Length: 104
Image (tube, rainbow, N blue to C red; front, side, top):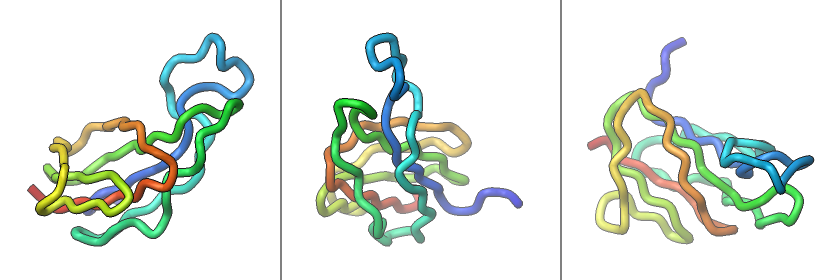
């Protein structure tokens, strides 16, 4: 089934077992969600961890989109960034951050 809308997965950057040698790759997955346009995610970025690292959001959109990440994200009028369709975007978040998007 083809992707419609936007999908976000939240996890940690890097390897749990070799943090000293890690690249910024998506490691341990905390959750994933496909919220509707203009709807804030129900999940939040997990706490930073000495073992797992800092939380990141990996975003993939079916269409060009505006994305906002924060405690109260607002993709319409708030601080936001552009996500081009069909590409993965990795963005670090702060613990407790949520996610919102709208079509561009």
